[in-house]
Image (cartoon, rainbow, N blue to C red; front, side):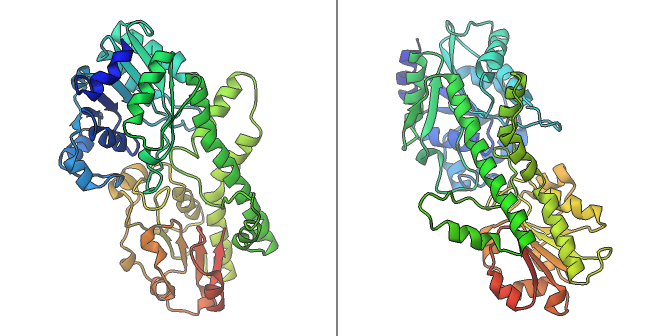
Length: 441
């Protein structure tokens, strides 16, 4: 059954369907469409219309790639009945209390289940804790389809590793972890992904192993960044520049090169909670992972507090202080504002009575307005500031120099101007010699 599916897909006798066309799903759909027939499904009709018009709102592959690809973009789930190989790439966020919100992956499973036919393979890419695919998704697929997993359809898991905004580490260039419920399914899943993943695949020994591998990748990174953030807090108290310390320590061959910063987005700031949630259900309370999460979740507040302290140092009245924030997305060169930690800086400043002005030429303005009630301003319209927070290292911000910042600040002595460089983009010596109140993580 499944052993023949790969050949049929390659010969365009069967189709592949991508369920969820966001920053992860859409590039996968476009990549596969160069080799096989692809159906791209998303519930968001507005997004589907953009794709049909040849517009890439994610900036992941570009308008030309969307315009020239052969993906059948649709919001009609009935089209999924024409597919035999399904890839589910929907987000897996957390609730306010940091427990996993599995509603997107459960909803996608219901949609796939309603349109599942005998002989199909369903592969999940969404980041989950070990056991979700088999314990939660399979029962939904069976209930909705009336089919039996293992007999009528097979299941697999291949965690996404796409890095939004990264033009180097792409789907094609990152080794892909693949897994299947049995050897036959694993072989089929591996061969299908090998069509587009030039770096090759790693065949995990089980679905749970693949799920666990993905969730610890980002947990490891989260913990390392948390350590850097803690060091930054300590070194700032000592009057030592953290970046200089890391540059010195980085000369050792086995020193891990991580840097302090805000940890947002849908992966590093979310995935660890999936693992700790599962651990809690088994009676183990995480210590290292949750400790790192607490540090990273508080960094926006820390940046805002440090800005206020520097305003006081510059003898600026907090009550009437004018602050600009440059950058609002969760990471550089990416329009995505979901789960951005810049909002924490903004909200903490509000607690002090400061309503910051925000400029971000890369961000999705409609999304920011809808999610946060934030309206962006053009950088060129921002003037008379007491403090400027350079929050995101967009390429468009990397070229900013003293003259650009002078235009943003009020006309006053530089000692009354606070420049907060969250990502350490600027030359500290240059701005300190010019008399600015310069601060960075």
